[in-house]
Image (cartoon, rainbow, N blue to C red; front, top):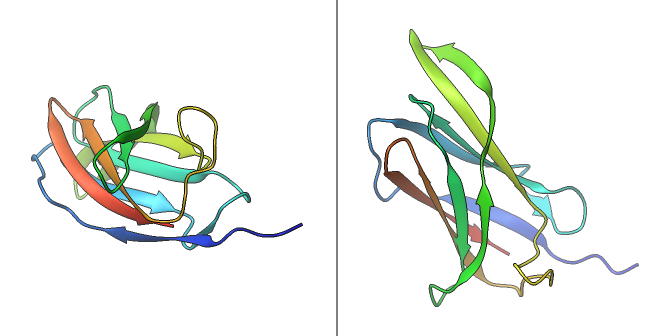
Length: 119
């Protein structure tokens, strides 16, 4: 079976509200077809979180809802963790083509941060 190229992840924080503590994507590097890529956002409030993947032209590839995973205390502050799993497929169920993808993470009362996923 032919293996597809791995995914290299680079984080780029463009805008952050005080409610977003951190954003992650793992494992890195990620090899398409192995296990899903985990997208994670840590917030200081309990809010709905969405992860929207966009292609290089800004077209929506897929939107995933973050699921609440629990809370922990970091530096005396409660942090709420949300995660979504991405299998490398678009909304139509097809594998995405090689290129750069932007993941827009929204939550925490309108807080937005972004990361770039390159395949």
